[in-house]
Amino acid sequence: MTLTRLADEPALLCQPPPPMVQPNCLGGEMVGLARKSLFGAAALAALFAFSTAIAAPVTASDPDTVVAALQNSGYKAKLTTDKDGDAWVETASEGNDIRIAFLSCNNKKSCTQLEFLAFWDCDKEVKRCEALNNTWNSEEVFSHTIMIDNKIAMYRHLLLDEGGASEALFIKNFEFFSRDAAGLMDKF
Image (cartoon, rainbow, N blue to C red):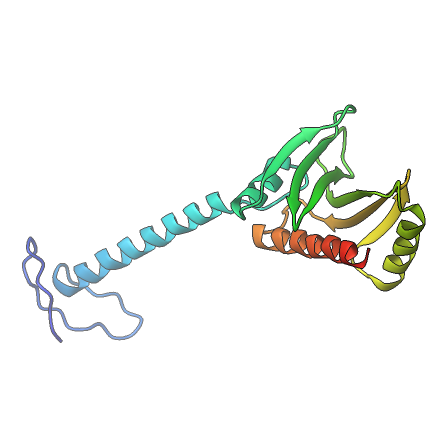
């Protein structure tokens, strides 16, 4: 066994302990290993704390987590409220404006669902939008469209429990919706 001498520690000869038995020596290699292990554990704890602070789960009950997840992924995002005081996140992707609504709320708080929404004006193409609406809903599974006041609206629900979803999972769902919105416009 080779011992490592620490500058401020006297070298003590220790035999390797039998398996599952604690060594009964101080200094030398055992102290060096203990220090390395302690430093490694502290570094891992700090890394874990740092990573969880950066990537807090996205929850429907905390609109700021939705904004942060979008901004952390390079999207512009703005939290707004409508005239009734309902929270919305305004963002955009692939040339389409997208709103994220908070649903199933208790007094406008403690929401448990998000809904991705995109709207297009159909005033000049009502019949074409109606046909697209029918075709889209018969072919697509994850997002759906409806006609509202000569507008076509696309929506997709995202259910979240109290623990929320990771930023990565939230962004994947957002980008799936964004591709669907772009796909809808490609069919128009």
